[in-house]
Structures are given as C-alpha cells and as structure tokens.
Amino acid sequence: KERRLILAIESSCDETSVAVIEDGNKILSNIIASQINSHKRFGGVVPEVASRHHVEQIIGCMEEALEEADIKVDELGGVAVTYGPGLVGALLIGLTAAKSFAWANGLPLIPVNHMSGHIYASRFVSEMSFPMMALLVSGGHTELVYMKEHGSYEIIGETRDDACGEAYDKVGRVLGLSYPSGKEIDEMAHLGEDTYHFPRAMMKEDNFDFSFSGLKSAFINLVHNAEQRNETLDNNNLAASFQSSVIDVLVSKTIRACQEYDVKQLVMAGGVAANKGLRERLTQAVESELVDVDFVVPPFKLCGDNAAMIGAAGFIEAKKGHFADWSLNAKPSITL
Ligand code: KG4
Ligand code: ZN
Image (spheres, protein in one colour):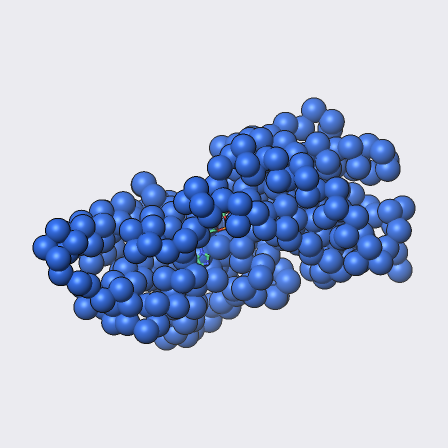
C-alpha cells in the first residue's frame, strides 16, 4: 500500500514549525521552533522580529522534519501550508518556503486555514464525527464553529472584543508575569480561590458570542486601586477568580451551543485549550449535561501552534481536490 505523506509548514505567528504526516492522522515528525524568548522582553509578538526568526529557522526545520520522519522527498504527495490568518510577514516566509519546495519537487501545494488546522489537531486523538461543534480558543480567536461535514464551517458565535488568550496575556502583564502568561495563570489559579467574583459577561444572553474586555478591565482596575491604597491582593486568588469567570462563560455557552445544534462531537482547540482548569470543567460539564456527545481535546503539545495540525487539515483538503497554484498569497485576516 502506498503511503500518503504530506509535508506541512506553519509560520503564522511566533512558532516556525514543519511536520511530516501520514494518512492525515499519524505524526512522523513535528518540529516546532519557538521564538518566545525573543518576544518576551517586548511583552508580545513583534511582527518584524517574528519574520526574521522564521527566515532563519525555516530551512533547518524542513531538513529536520524530513530527517526525523526518515522518508525520501519523492515519497511525499503534497505540501500543506498555512496561508492565514496571522501576521502577513510571518505567513509569507512559510508560504515562500512551501511554494519553492513544492515547485522544485513537482508536488501539489495545499492551502490551509490556520484555524481549521487547530480543529483538525483533534484527528490525532480520534476520528471526527459530524455534526460537530468546535470551541476555538487562542491568542487571536475565541469562537464556536459548527461543522456539518469536513470543510464546512459556520461561526455561530465569537468574541466581540478581546480573544480569550489575549485577556490572559493582558492580565498577566498587570501581575508582572512574562508573555505569554496563560499557562502561569492556570497554575496560579489552581493554588487560589474565586474570592474576587469578577463579572461573567454575556453569559445569560441568548447568543453564542463572548466578551472578555470587561473582565480584563475589572481585573486591571482592582489591581490598580489596590496599589493606590497600598493594599495587597492575593495573586493566586486573583488568578483563580479571573480563570473561573473565563471558564464559566466558555463552558456554559459551549454546552448550550452543543444542545441547540444537537452535535455528536465537541472539539476544543487552540492555545487556551491547554488550560487544565478549562479541560477539567468542560469534561465534567459534557459528562453531566451532554450524555451522548464525544468530547475531544488534542494533547497539550498539539493545542498551541504546530505544523502537524496543518498537515491533518491539509490531508482532508487534498482529498477534496483543493489545491492552490503558485499565485497563492498570504491572507492575514481570513476567517473560516
Ligand atoms: O493557538 P496559540 O498557540 O497561538 C495563536 O494562534 O494565538 O495560542 C496562544 C495563546 C496565548 O494567549 C497563551 O497565553 C494561551 O494561548 N495559553 C493559555 C494556556 N497555554 C497557552 N491560556 C490559558 N491557559 C493555558 N494553560
Ligand atoms: Zn493558533
């Protein structure tokens, strides 16, 4: 039987990643070069710095991915690449590498939307079953996506202001944590309790949209007012209070969306899907309120940005015959 192998490239933000995927759900290699240490001192990702790092890293990542997968280039069936959404300069590096490699080796080019990649990371855990709901929570996105079948995406709700991960990173800055602070706040939250009772925005509203800027402002005001009065707050309790507000809203809207759309499967994906508190609470809620729904979350390493997920989504695109020509360009703000 012929092996169906895809080389996948991801460079939309601050990780340069190249993977080799077999049959859309087996990882032969998944090299991830993070640039986080170069961005930390700026408190966020600096687009120029990101592009430069991608240029420096991409070839090495490609060589390493091919070597670790232990395959010959002529065994590959295609090259999948993220073309958006993301930072335009960063996307262009991955795109240029993918096009050059595909052209030089006579391989088809498979365009992949970064957000569909996050959803398809679930394929490394289990097959998809439809209809499906995806809760996408990352540094740039917070949305509920309804999928009737492969390749069909309906955004039924999204954030009206900050993305969930963005709120984590902004309150982390106020606590003096380094960027990105989601993971550290998650750890602190486990040591504290919800003593500050922040608002739960839009939780009772009859829609599937989210809002995190009010929570962020309430948090920042509380900390600043305390500083002015020379009061000390308990940072673990602050983290726990912030996190329980975020989780309450995400869990209640996600459960309601699954009920209303009568889905068979729920997938949670994106960087914030690595949140331990959120994983626990959503697992419990699904068990008690969505008896027949299969809940799938990718392993921690596949929640953040990586090329393996791009290969998984690319495999499905290729099966549908969705290829791109050499004019494929970066689309920084494309939606699903
Ligand atoms: O998907 P991702 O790697 O990049 C984007 O496409 O945005 O997500 C990064 C985001 C950051 O905001 C980071 O703080 C957040 O995911 N994050 C977390 C956790 N791990 C990463 N947020 C909450 N809890 C975590 N454990
Ligand atoms: Zn992402």
